[in-house]
Amino acid sequence: KGQPISLAFDMERPLAFWSSEPGSLLASWPSVAAGVRPKRAAAARWDLNDAAGEAVELRVFEHGTAQAHMNAWAHNRLP
Image (tube, rainbow, N blue to C red; front, top):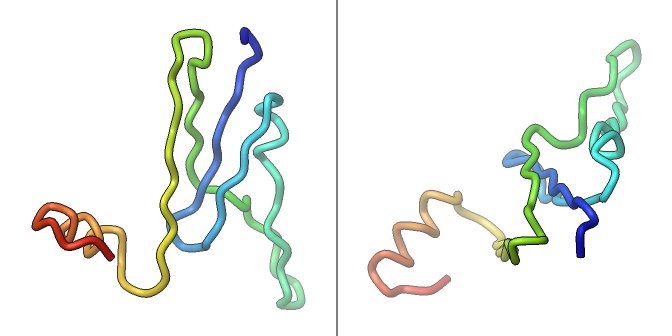
């Protein structure tokens, strides 16, 4: 309790990681193409307030899009 925690994720990759050191979330995604500079592995960051009990649940599914899964949940059809 009292230790900050941040979550990083990217909608284009099946990737989520977390750290108590926000600078660690700047990790690069390795590039396989010659001459291409590496990009950040995660496009978005979310800082959690653990002292207030804030938590997050991640659900990762194959195929489809996040929007398709949300629409299914709205109609009580779980993927």
